[in-house]
Image (cartoon, rainbow, N blue to C red):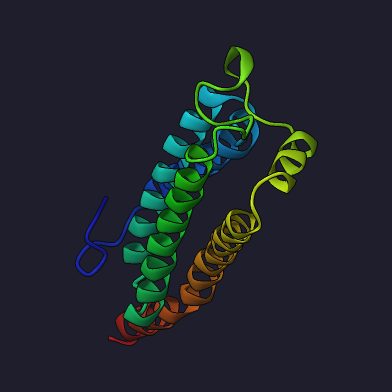
Length: 168
């Protein structure tokens, strides 16, 4: 990690950082997808946490504008709170198959089984769970878009600084 206001990261540092981000992304989505089993979920969330930290470092390296950073952090906090809300609702419904300890041999749910179980819940619980899941999806998408849309905000300054150094 370097302070991008005073130090220009080397190309090997950038290459290694990008490789690490790709590796973390593969770890999270391919090796340990969410919903396979309890251990996979733990590894998924660990990988996802590291991936978010990598984005935070990258925002500094790219000198992303504070408005985009605020959107990113707001989306991240919303995502964490909504995931916690979903987990809390699920834990309070013992009939749900993938509640910790209720699934056979550490397995979580299949989508079809989970949906059938959700249909049996009281309407108010179903609606609350739907809303919390919806907020998870929206905040994940806002997290992605706030980061992607913020990338050019800092690159403009970096390019202008490089032009200024070449002219001097």
